[in-house]
Length: 345
Ligand SMILES: Cc1ncc(COP(=O)(O)O)c(C=O)c1O
Image (cartoon, rainbow, N blue to C red; front, side, top):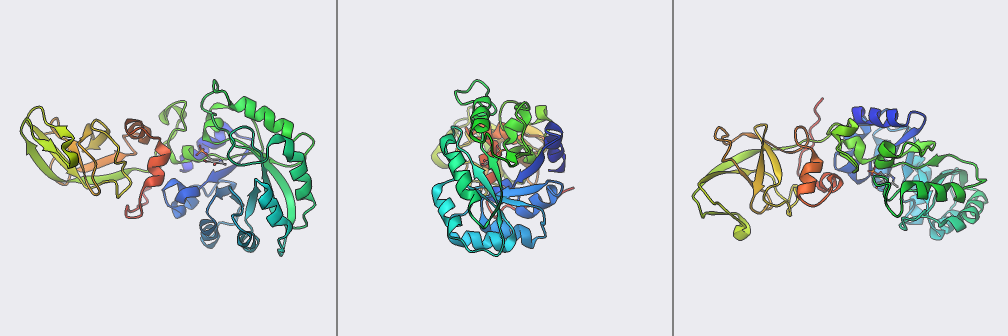
């Protein structure tokens, strides 16, 4: 995490960094995120309880709530714990207008530059900023937008277009800006702002547009297990639920203690890469709740107890994700609580 943070810093040397730690630090555990990103300038997330935990764990630098207040009591929490908030719609503005707080809040006005999830459309930004400025419990105002396709400059909504809309929307308004997610940090260096907001790259996965290694990123998470049983199959034997895999010749099958109840994707098909004793092989048959099955035919020395790496060091999460028709983000975030998060230096 520290090394990936340094990659982000080098990519945007004049910007401050909001390290994104929503979804339990993308599945890595909030405490680990806090330690790994100690050198970040701020942490940013969505979940209010987790933000309070960050304060309890001793984080004193800024915290930004990426989706702002969901209801008025969130503003009380922001007040108590000095949390900065995004304001993205009229309802949140109204909440702030009627809030009675002990001190003014730092507010980040979110602008919808075409992604059409959160934010004020450009035409409404000046008016929203004026309303914010008139609220006594608002301290200073920053401005942000979010890129939909920063990994793909050819997109109909590319980052340059969103950037141009953003600049136009905030023309004449004073205040810091925050823009780039991981893809923009790595691939759209022409788009400068006061802050960047990298997430997935800090965990060592690619946001698209190149492999993690090509960006100099290192896996923060290695999901490990072991072989707990071995079966010898004859040609025609089948494996697992639904008998979706049939051996076409005699083969050895290893059973791995990891399944969808751990967050390994059930839809990972036969052929998904996996490392056994440091050697690449493939998942075969259907992933079950607590187990999956792998082909050991080419690995005659592997015995019960052998190490298995499902993704991470030696096997990029993005390759496993691609085989399973998803993205590294989803695999990380889907890791379940029963998987122990062990720190290794
Ligand atoms: C508003 C905002 N900023 C930054 C990020 C970080 O994005 P990434 O993980 O692609 O770097 C996210 C993640 O979804 C986000 O929603």
